[in-house]
Image (cartoon, rainbow, N blue to C red; front, side, top):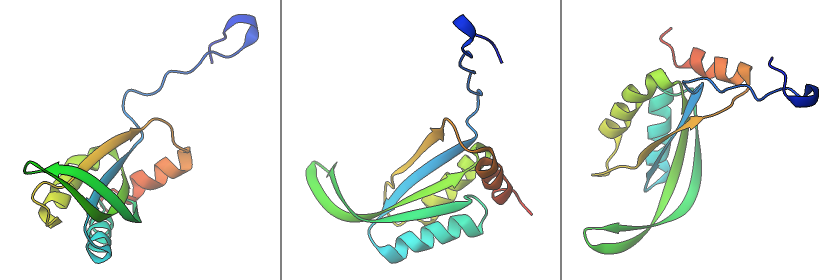
Length: 123
């Protein structure tokens, strides 16, 4: 580890590629959220998913302000799985324009990151 002034360790640079991604989507019912989450985990495109609900969404759609009750799904995956996970969610989703947002995880426990990578690899 590099040393900084007066013996304090320097900050280690973060790796170029994030160890994990969190991917969020929403849907309009608990059952649909469960199906999307289970389908992604069963296909090994996500190691796990959490469903939070209900949330109130406010958005503009076709020139109108809409308010809807939705269920939010947060999936954990390896970066290499993102494209396949996005395609899976689009195919399984009933929204015309589903929200699918990926956020890089800057830091993760080594054991947890290894578990996510192991669970998202073909057996």
